[in-house]
Length: 96
Image (cartoon, rainbow, N blue to C red; front, side):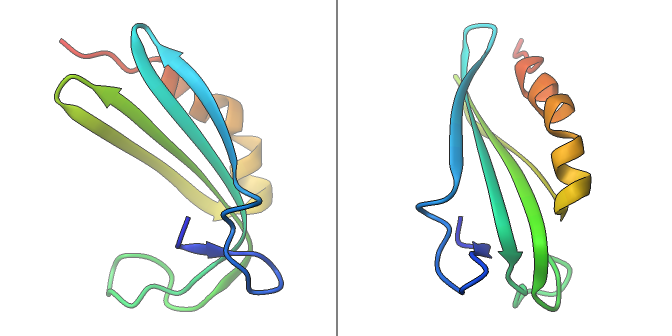
């Protein structure tokens, strides 16, 4: 959540959408965030300047070995168009 802020510069904590899913017996949380993706201070770890009208889909799959994290970020129109595919990916996760 800390990587994004609303258009007026506020944290996205109140606007982020969370959805509970299942991948077999595994618990999954889908986080859906829209706004401005803030520039990263670490080289190679994100945009070097703020990106307005961006979107992030994040997935947290709780496995017996610990959580697995999935993330898709990009222009809002692009990421929103792939939301169903991202949910399908999360729902397909399996452990051995």
